[in-house]
Image 1 (cartoon, rainbow, N blue to C red):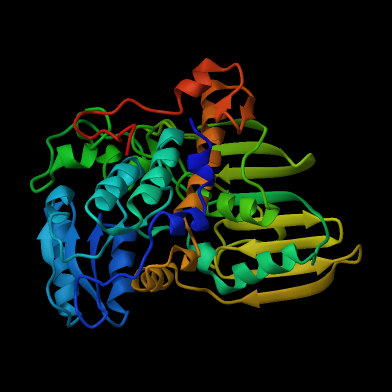
Image 2: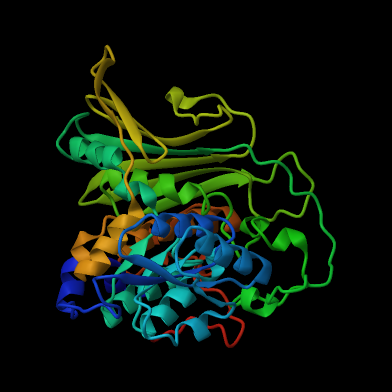
Length: 433
């Protein structure tokens, strides 16, 4: 694993060949295709429909019932009916499409992004951008090679309030920030057990499986519940949790840890789920000889409200707490922060204001300028790597000592073997992009 792929920044990308660019369509219109549109992908469609000079030119989904519903949705909005596809590689043959917006399951993100880049498209890739650490490397390498805009779906990076919080912490609002906590407490009920059954009509199951091993169809391994199986998802840590991990790392001002330790399990339920529903992870950083700590917690059931970091329905706590030498700062979801200063916990600066990660992506595409991205894929790949390291520590059942120069766990071949999965041909993420 070559560390330079992970550290490639926007300056290097600019040197790689970002020049003035004419979009494929006239009038400065960005023609975009949405891929994977059942859940979060529907939000992608809704976002682009609101933008001026953005045309949803195509929609792709392996479930034809979902595909047809979304095509109807766009047409009913008053926009032109997009072209429909169930196979992304066929879609990518359309040279008039400028950008691809990907919201498929995690296990297909990197491969579909690389295919899109090879076809000359800009890409918005949902979180997490990779299914394993090898893919974190490859998605960054492909971005640099093909010279296109790639935005990561960590929406908080575009939140106006969150960006202000980061700026104020960098300016010393709460002093020296030494500890960041990420919290993901969401009410997740049991998924039960589902039997093997025939693939539903209109579902192109081979396309859905993509790089994953062949497995007989069950409803639990399909829509949404795929999150809880290692072949496709990364548990709630890689689902909701990656947002808060990314914010925690951002606010702490760190890249790679020297030590990772995770404990947890699948509690309460006897069902098909493979990934843990309760997880506690510690990351120790020692960059520049300065030690910092990041802790992360995933909990699936009842919870207290950690410093009032809870959502509107009062069923969970999702956010971050940063501890410094002169106070602490709280972040809730993607649109608000507040702070307390000094030993008396006097209220400090606060703000509530969201942003729009999709608008930011389109702005960067239209300008063909990677420096405009709020959520660059290079940052997303680092955060995804930390999430994978936490899951690997849980899976092998021990603390990992990580060498960020060699990008490997020291003296732990079992852990290193989990950096890269086996692919099901022909859905193979290439070693040389």
